[in-house]
Length: 235
Image (cartoon, rainbow, N blue to C red; front, side, top):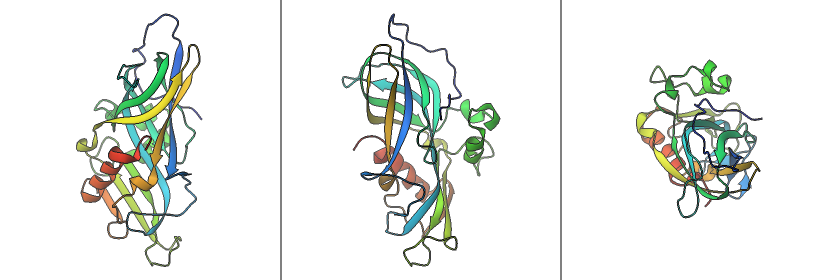
C-alpha cells in the first residue's frame, strides 16, 4: 500500500538526467527480530505487553551522503509510521543518484500541517486516530497503545490493564538525524528503509506504574527520548 504525503510538490532537483525517485518505508523490529502486533513483548521493567497501536509522525526530509552532501530536500513532506501497516511507502520526490547514509528529519508536523483536517490527508482514518486528546487541535507526535500484564501471570489477556501513551507537545517536535542506507541509481526508484527498534522504544518505561500518559509528562518524555535517541535507524 502506498500513500502520498500531504505536502507541497514544488521542490524538485533539476539536474538533467537524474529522474530517480525516493520513497520512505519503516522496518519495525524488536532487536534482531521483526516486530509483530500479534506477539507479546516486555516493557522496560519486564512486564509483558501486547500492542494495538504504534504510530508516530515525521516531517521534512533531507537524505545525505556519508560526507554530508544533500541528495534531495522536501521540507513540506511528512509521513505516518504505523506498525500495523509496515509495508507502506511514502513517496518523497526526485533524488540525486548516489549512496544515502543519513536522513535529516523532525518529529511531529509543522504548524501548518498540524491544522489540516484528517479528511485533507491521504489516510483519514489513521490521522483521526492521531488527533490529540489534550490540545483541542493538531496531532499527537507519538502513540503507543495496548494491554499490559497487570495481574503478574506473564500473559496478556483482555482482562489486563489497557495502556495509552500519547505524546502531544510542541517541545516534542524536534529535529533528528537517522542513520539509514539506500543506493540510488540513474533512472531507478529507491526505497529508504528506516529501522524502528521497539525494544529501545520501551526502554525505562514501566507501563503498570503509569499506564495512561496523555499530552506531556515523565512517561511521555521518556518515550520521546527513546524514539529520538536510539529507536530509529541502524544500530
